[in-house]
Length: 306
Ligand SMILES: NC(=O)c1ccc[n+]([C@@H]2O[C@H](COP(=O)([O-])OP(=O)(O)OC[C@H]3O[C@@H](n4cnc5c(N)ncnc54)[C@H](O)[C@@H]3O)[C@@H](O)[C@H]2O)c1
Ligand SMILES: O=C(O)C(=O)C[C@]1(C(=O)O)C=C[C@@H](O)C=C1
Image (cartoon, helix red, strand yellow):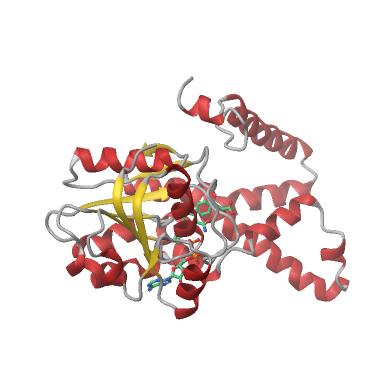
């Protein structure tokens, strides 16, 4: 593949920035990738493992002359980072981010975007429970979605170019409106994370009673919860504080359903439980039949309508 951006700057050098750098390198999508992270230790590690072509000691130095700048920091840090780099952005460049919440990032970053810079928020729907500069890998975005959330005046050629970059990194790209994005992600990602955190917390409380049996005999379902609940505390604190309304709306509905199931168990209403589980099983099967299971080998073809 040919170079899409001569110079890309990544601010924040963790799982997502590291994976972007390696995914771009795999296909030669960027001429040079520069990077900056706030802590000396992270920059040192990034240098040692050659995560990007050049690790800079300031955000200003990293973004100078960059054709694409991507903010890869926790959602709560986006506004301050945007304010810091704004005076150093090259006219005509594209500014993007990878935050898990979009409305709050648009509100925080938008006011700092200089005239002549295209701001195109993005969100790759791919990740792991690991964080930091050593956690990235080149195939993270393969067969995953990346949602682009442009608002206002964005040049179509800037949008096409960013889309081509994400496709070159292995992702399927769609566009979505910011508030809708936040509601959808509250259902598919944010509330499930909170539920996993809660379940593991409950098990931890119980452990003190059962003397480690919870961990010793933990079944596959619970192990999956512990993987999710091992995700980065800073990232997830920021996600919940930034997507408050949508997450609370979904958690309200979740609590109502939970109470109904609780009542069915207490009253011995097997029909309610059976019907409910039949409905949820059909959803999983529907996902697989529609070719939307991103773990399936043919997801790529299905997503492209092949
Ligand atoms: N981890 C996931 O599963 C996932 C998936 C999609 C999107 N995201 C989003 O991507 C972004 C980055 O997540 P990650 O998983 O790569 O996190 P990470 O913790 O692995 O990396 C974040 C990096 O940002 C740096 N940083 C923090 N505050 C900073 C600041 N003020 N200035 C400069 N650098 C700063 C940290 O030192 C670290 O290097 C977040 O906004 C997150 O919501 C994460
Ligand atoms: O697989 C995981 O570990 C993830 O949690 C990834 C996941 C998700 O919920 O799907 C987490 C947050 C992101 O914003 C996007 C992807």
